[in-house]
Image (cartoon, rainbow, N blue to C red; front, side):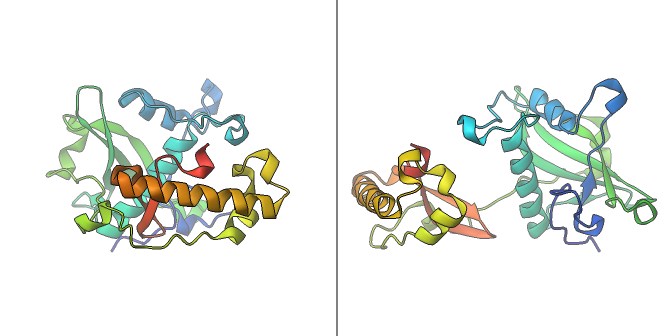
Length: 234
């Protein structure tokens, strides 16, 4: 039986190998870096901006932070749904990345089982490569696995305006203060006042146009709402 992994790849240096699904290898002696596999995927897929727009969130040596996070959470959702495909001899694995090539072919991530994983303290699987749906490399996985699904009830797509907004100010100041405008970061009272005013303004907009409210997946379930023009993204 497949193991329930905590992440697709190692998220921090000392993360136990048993928690991690796969190792993404690269050839450092040929100028490659840990981001090279993601760069290859980005080039294969339809053009997309995979970096943060705001300078304070960008990090040196991280050109694809959005893609790495997206692929990790896509894997976790597919694992939850039983959407990871394995070859008959359990030596290969595959999942649908949810991305497509410019000519509309689905892109799949493929892996091979690393036989020395326990001995080398490495994840059980190693990335083999990314291939489109026409590739012969996917012959062991027919029919091909589907994309990750998140919506189980269509009602989740429309925000119920009878709900009250509950703002977790402790979370904002303890974990997300750097997302606030600089003028508000050290003035809790002013920040709360500004956020409360923005929340009321957004609610009035949602009442008039439900498309402003965007459902989002977080922590294993559909969360009530993320706004298309949220305060944090200003």
